[in-house]
Length: 430
Image (tube, rainbow, N blue to C red):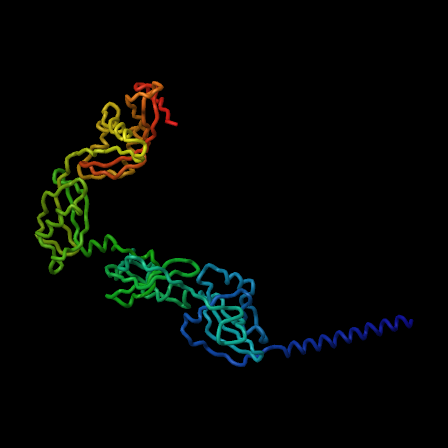
């Protein structure tokens, strides 16, 4: 019984002791809450207050050690935002609170406005610390070679901004539609990439309309005006085949410097029409339409005649000319032997004079004509009774214009053949 009494007394004292500790703990906890002693709005330039999470602290509805503070963005979330590849996950700091414990808390908001609250910022208001650090949302980039550009596709997409989206808090568009400025010349004065995404942006200035000066995605500008704008700013030459009446091509040309009052007179129209850089390939100038003058944005008919057919002369050339001098001689002899080479019979190599055959097209046709691999046999006899021969493999071709000549390049290998009359018996020299 004494034992039971002792045990009961012990348990009772223990319970009383635990209750006393709990009460003392609660009291101590209540007294440990911090109090905000000052709150200030940050007034330095906005771009000096762009910050990024360090991933070490959460965001709270109030400074974290103040009574009633609730988690807005957990430490786990802040770790993700710290390594995010999106500019939207940067923060802007806009206020600072100091507690009676000497701790500093910054009030921050993400660039997209998703998270807003207080985050621990160290013990000093002189620099960002603790859960945030300064962020460079943009990184300087190399200026392009061409700085005079135009809107590539005037419209409501890819307009100018006062800062690329999310690189500054509440970045906004300068204009909502660039269509009215389609003819304007823009000058690139700065280049930078969004640090996280790596996308390139240009700062453009418009002397005619400064209100649209701002940042624009690099892919939204072009060094050439759109075809529509070019036509509006110049005149269109409409080339017509005089013999058939069929349309051949349209060419937009810039207004000549001699134009007066935005009008091109007859003499200048003829000069533009005869210019070989304007004429369609394979045609020559015949005459001008009835227009005596054309106003800016207008058009004129130009009659042309199609050129006669002409040959494209190909000159085979040994690329690795260190084989021996005879390699070129043998190749030329093979090429000029009409019984072997088929160029003289192939209509591909006879087209309208002045038109162009690309290198790729020439190479493809030579393969079709089985001239990509050639074995040229000579009558020079070796000591073992075989004959000297060369095997040539097509390497490349130069672009060619019908009516002129172009080179075709082969690599050569010296060897021998058993007979000058039997095919397929080439043996490379060892």
